[in-house]
Image 1 (tube, helix red, strand yellow):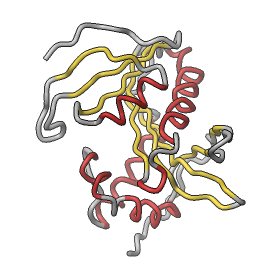
Image 2 (cartoon, one colour):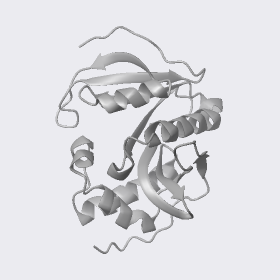
Image 3 (spheres, helix red, strand yellow):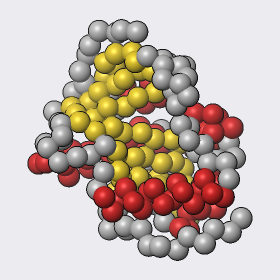
Image 4 (cartoon, helix red, strand yellow):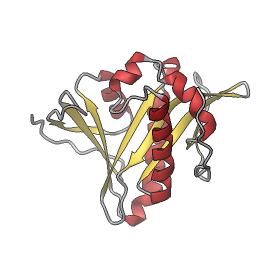
Length: 203
């Protein structure tokens, strides 16, 4: 597959998560055109396509998604990072994290993520999400950011565990919103103080 997408993306923000006793270090950086083959490969995974609000199923889908990443950085309201694992001098794509809905003087924004099939079960998601969360509050708290939200469907137990591990406390149940969210969702929240907000569940 050949994609004639060669406009430069923002490459000035590089985040890292240190290695652990059982896992190599992670690098989080803005997406760039040479990630396209790895992105296409990641989306061969049926579980990833099934869980995505907008699965990438065609060349046009990939081109539009990459354009959205660039435009998000340009407008300053959506910051998507490719998550790469470095082992023995080689990098491989293991996931994606995103901060979206950022606005000046707005107290809230949303985070999201996915993990490639090759990296699931190795602690990539909580490490990458913690790194993104720290960066988000460090970067935007002066502009009023105090609250980050994480939303997942009720059948995604893995996302619930990731949220809990990274301090995103369960807040409430959100009603389904087909076709984007065909099932009810869990809303998790983390504040700039590092603590979640516990609320009453509601349908």
